[in-house]
Length: 309
Length: 119
Image: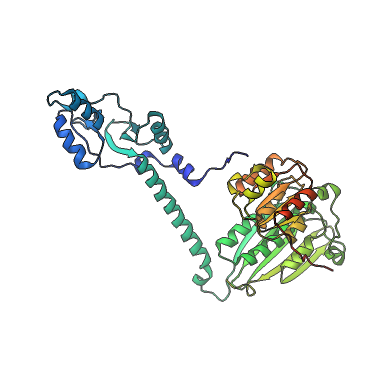
């Protein structure tokens, strides 16, 4: 089975978010001159299993963990300063690094937490755990989701907010003839836009099919063309114009199966002679005008009333 | 039935959109004419075809199809795979002919439209 090459939003966020955005800023720290017996109380009261050791200048000089504490107990030594027992080889991460660096460092060292330092000053500014990373990503996903919700909300209520005797939202898509690579893009973009406007899926489907067929006609036959879409509260009107060869016999062209497409186009599965027919089937009104040698002018209307939102 | 179950049962090879294999398949359509598919396929259909160029992705995406099965072991073009990944359309390949693929899908309980007009 092929590997999934697409990134999930969560994976993206691991690269986008900085350590400083998700870290815990309030860090419990100890001083090097604190005693090991004090350490026990600090760890116990704060439910933590280790803590950075910071000097008077907020510089981190080491880390002391519950393991260091147990080792000290086992050794039966007298109470001593933390700096005697802490480990000085400290793995840290800079506040401006992306989360993915923290993730790989957790993996590499098997740690559950990393002290965060300011790159320029070396000051301890926070601490990051796996939990912080998960919380940070979830929070960002929630923000993204809200933004999309607001987006949708605004778009779907646009006509309620406009006070006018006549209101229409107009979009234009330019189509290049012969560009099979981008063929279908205008219809796809239009489909996305219409679903943002909260238009009924069945209406969207009809608009998308009809527009796709028109788009393909331009791609196959014309040099260039444009598709103008007007969304009104009661209907969607689509006007397509191209500078192509035009249609000599419209009646014939409307017959299902009649096609003038060249063979190489047909081999790709286009030019089945169903395009205009499909447009007619999908629309409530259709008007096709053509001038041979100049191009065509196709207008079709899809009414909203049949499928109320 | 999900596309994943079909892929496993019929030994299709996934070439794109492996993240969307949990798409529900409610029916099927077979055709190599894009306009025919535009007109007659239903949402959540699995589409059997030998067309391999990138426009099949647009057709599948516009019609809300669950996935595309390429027959006769035909390999999708590079652009087709790229487009399928961005649009989230699964493309799977079978070494069988269209007739065999459709027969096996039918045996799994995937049906087509019984009235596509005319007559």
